[in-house]
Length: 231
Image 1 (cartoon, one colour):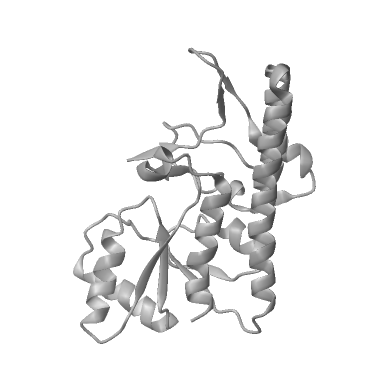
Image 2 (spheres, one colour):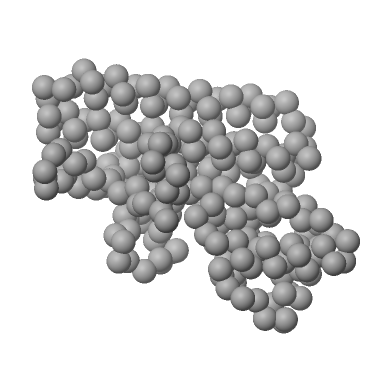
């Protein structure tokens, strides 16, 4: 089970404040065409990837979002400004620490391998921020689908042609198809490791229960990326 990370500020009872973070970011990035068509998806929206830019996967954008949320919540509840400011500053510091640590790690590497993703690449903002090459090895991919024989041949061939040893999938998706590809390749003596990344739009039940933060999920993504980068 997953929980949506919606831009809601619940202040007791049924009172809920909804923030339009896309508008705030667009104001900050008037010259940044990558953010010009952003919109927030509601739970009932269809996934239109031409508009659905996962801008929050970029740590810099996450920090900006935190700043805008802080400003808004202080306007709503000014009596607790110190508490909100301290929490926001701690989160932004943790994000910056994780990001700068990964940047330092990447600077020690002279030849960065391509990161391969199964299906729609929701992590391009993360890759761009850190200067990584990340590509979808096959776009026509349903992670929880039963693959036909033809699809299995197509996908396993694509993996071998790319010489991919690691395949990244969304942590919230059932990796049924990816595991089928992995198992089929194993029969040919080809080892493929399936690794997860999170795009932050939802969290797993276990993470929700322990109130996992963006910075903690970022650290998890970084550690999982290092598996392929350090191979």
